[in-house]
Length: 157
Image 1 (cartoon, helix red, strand yellow):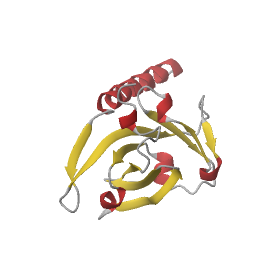
Image 2: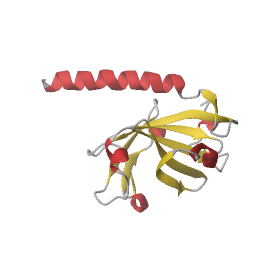
Image 3: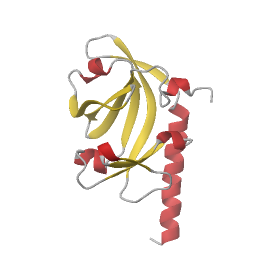
Image 4: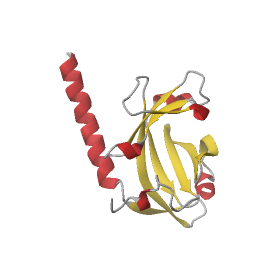
């Protein structure tokens, strides 16, 4: 396939992903948790692994990760490039993930296949990755209600 056709195809796919991402970005849904209680899950972002440097990426040395924050994308796309020795499962390195903001991370993990255990990559947020039908899913719990990455703080921006 010629390079221009590949670029057009990739642009089309990301355009559709972006439209979907933007449409559901501020959607709040409630689901029954494993314990039968209702729990909130709000779509937060899509994370796409890459091996190429991207404009605007930030190096998170402690995670051995270069990232372009979802906050820099009008469609909530996060780009991730890992150092060779980053302690990250291959599934996260190779497969895009969808992230959801949750109200109770611990209850969301009950009965799930945990890929990356709960941790705090920055102050005010706890994250974990689970596997759902072979796909990585990131769950975020904001312990700081004013955290800048918390979507409910960005609804009217």
